[in-house]
Image (cartoon, rainbow, N blue to C red; front, side, top):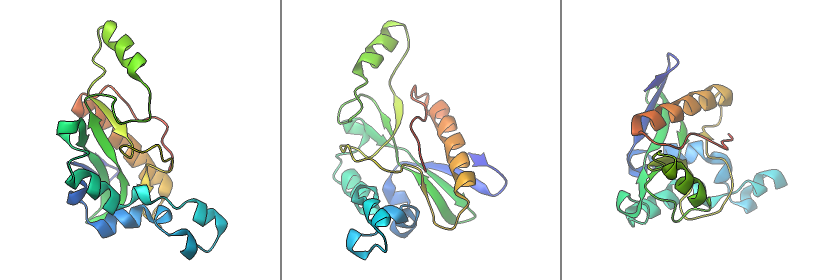
Length: 171
C-alpha cells in the first residue's frame, strides 16, 4: 500500500516485525513515566499498554495470536526506512477478550446475510485502557500521517475482507 509520494504503508503480522525503538518513538507521549514528566498533562497521558514490550508480551505468549482470534495486522507508515506512524490492529474472528460489546450487532448483521467476522480492530487486546491508537512519531506532520494511516486502515479492511472499518480513531 502507498499513500502520498513519500509515505508508504505496510501491514505486518507481528509487533516483532517493528523495531522496539521505532514503535516506542511513535508511542512517545504514552511512554514517559509520570515521575519523569514535565507537566501534569504529560503525566496523565502515560499509558504503559502502548509500549512495544506490552504488545510483544501479548504476542510472544500467544495470548494475542490467530489461534486465539487475535491475528496481528499492525499498520506501519514509513518515509524511506524511517517509521513515522503505527496503528496497532488485530484481525478478529470473534468478539471475545474485548471491551466492545458488539455481539448483538454481529448477530443482527449475520441474520441479515452479512459476514461480521473477520473484523479489523484497532485496539490494545484484553484491556479497557483508553488512549491514542494512531501512534505518530514526534516531529512529524501528525495530520498528514494520520490521514495516511486512516486511508491505510480502509485499504487494509478491504484487502482483509474485514467488516469493521476504522472508528473512534484519534491521534
